[in-house]
Length: 276
Image (cartoon, rainbow, N blue to C red; front, top):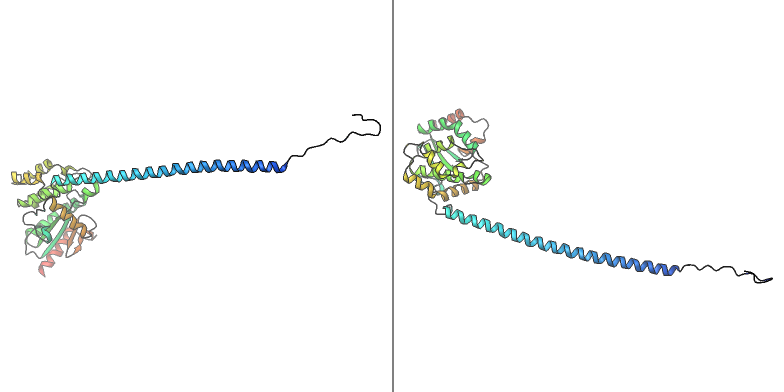
């Protein structure tokens, strides 16, 4: 712009941005973002607490349901006679009358056997040692005290161990324990098959023992007459701290755990004890 001779136009003016105002805006925006984040965090914490409370309620309800199932099952046991009076089989001996004896009372050696009729290892022991044990008991050199256990029922589920043991105790009432004991092992189902839970199956097998399948035996099996006695026997097994079945004790030593044990060695040990 021409202002005339000797006069110059004033230089253009540049306005610098207000730095302090920018800082204030930045701080304000940061506070707003922080406030938003805090609200988000509060909402997240609220949801988390709600989930924890909800999970706690579910756990409590689940526990109550489990307790209810246990109580219901206990009721079923009572109805089945499993929690009824303890009725020992005829001729049972030992502490609390929990042993079923086979053999002569004055025998020089006593073999204590803890067995479960569903136990495959028990069946293997019986198959290997039965002829020798029968020979020694028949000759009066050995007495065997059988204790019945329900270990497989607890491990695999079911009630075949208990029901088979009850049936064996019923056979003891009839004076037929040893023969029926052997029949049960000769016809043992697979460990996962709870076939012995069927009373009809147990009664059918009684037909293999002369004179055992009687109305008295059938009633004893169907009523679970010795169920509580079997449970008491199993409790004694647990209290004894034994590791499994079969547990076979001779002179207080578990000979089943002896890797060098054989039927011939057992026979030798019993005969030597009788000489002494």
